[in-house]
Amino acid sequence: MLKDLRQKFEAWVTRGQRPSLDPIRLDRRRIYILPTLRGYAFALLLFLLFLWSVNYSNSMGFAFTFLLAAVALNSMWQAHDNLLGLVIRANGAEAVFAGQDARFQFHLENPRRSTRYGVALQWRDQSPQYIDIPAQASVAVVLTVPAERRGWLRPGRIRVLTRFPLGLFQSWSWVEFDAASLVYPRPRGRQPLPAALPSNPGGGSIELGSGSEGLRRFSTLCAG
Image (cartoon, rainbow, N blue to C red; front, side):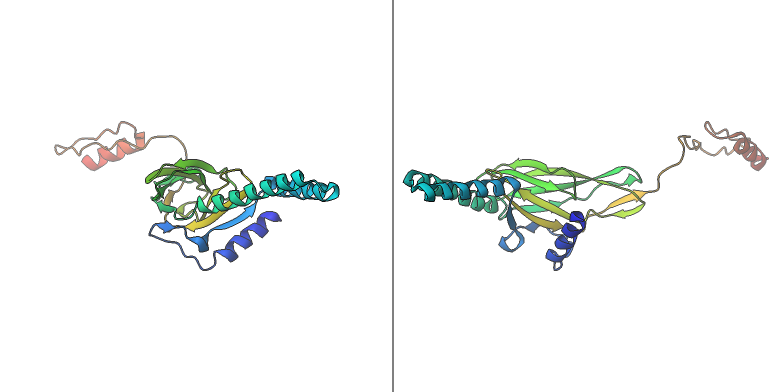
């Protein structure tokens, strides 16, 4: 139920976005932020501290509560700023057989003069791939996507997220590239194909090292 609601919400938020061939730069309109479970627990703690301070008229309690609230607000700003201006490029993936995993490679570029910590890429419900991006550098991230059927495989929406610095807020964005991997039909059996040998201009049968007896007879008849 929650999974279906989340997918509908993602589709509604990204309804105006189209798969891109060019690198995507995250601006303020593409970035969203909400508290994590730890953030909601922290907010409850602040509320209880505030009630305790009001009940006992404790000035130190008020100061401590407001100090923690300022730390939380600063954490929210840093979580949003950690993704702002990030550039994502897609390099596609090599061809695979059905039943294997396609490995899509993405490059995250940091044009800033400061390091971005705890940035992750995530495909659907898989575990996020967290990395640190040095200043004015690029880091490659590989996401595996199951290739269930033959044809062209496109990963669809990819989530870029961060919980830096304290894990109280999660800032994220969705990106989608026109990158694809060609999925071939799954081969049956493990028997190797017959080894093709050069044709014999002088006639005679052509022996195939891995061929069957029927192929040898057929080659003898053709030569005769």
